[in-house]
Length: 379
Ligand code: MG
Ligand code: ZN
Image (cartoon, rainbow, N blue to C red; front, side):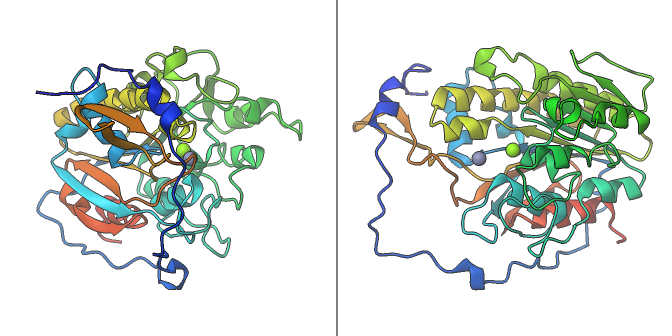
């Protein structure tokens, strides 16, 4: 039986957050002298383990404490519980603490790089990403985010640039990218730009049907893009509704028409923002939305056994802990210890053909190499 405080009773926690202690005599090891080049992984897979489709889910700012909180603050089923395979990834970039750009690049492109890097290596050279590689295999590709589609995490799957903050430059990569379906906010970086270029026209010239008001289906369109807000989608707390789950189901419907399979990246972007704000209510409501989306994804993967689902985070945020409230072991007091990111190992959950490749402990850039090897075992 669960014993914890009723949901959303945590107002005191925020006022009681204490500053991070920084008086330890133990100094972190110098990772700058450690090699971060990827190790080789085995290319031997059990019979029939090659997936046709890969759905890759990133909860931005989602560490083990965030996910654990679902157990106590989500009223209905927790879908993270349903994954048979779990691994752990180490997420440092070339800094000890990663940002979402370097972590996104590691996962999308396979190399550790500097914070702020979008699809480029530590020297600034372009790196091929999973979506570009999958297009060469004849696969269709999709991206969904609740932050701007030009934000660091999704950007690493189609753009190559040395600064995540240059949203208008990042947007200019999307029309000619290997993406066939995208859904998220960020409209202003396409139609209200300093250079006066209308990238909506450029997207259309490159075969996209673009929708800016709602998730209306375009079953005949080859390529579809939804840009549903100027900058960010509303918070769940402010009534975003079922955007993430609806966009996911539309993407699967659209991409699964491709005979050669698909790669779909879905980001629950704003879990991280709740962490930065040290706002537990914001964080957990975003994570519940992502978990419900996992339910829809797993339902598809269970019906379509050729689909691999991999779920992870890019890093944890906020130094969240779920501690006893003032020594009362029947009450949890969620508390944050930092406005920034953490260095914690991050869990990886997998289901479907090839899922066993994701057990164990490894660097986050190995996620790219594992998925690449599963999509293309001969290369
Ligand atoms: Mg992100
Ligand atoms: Zn963050």
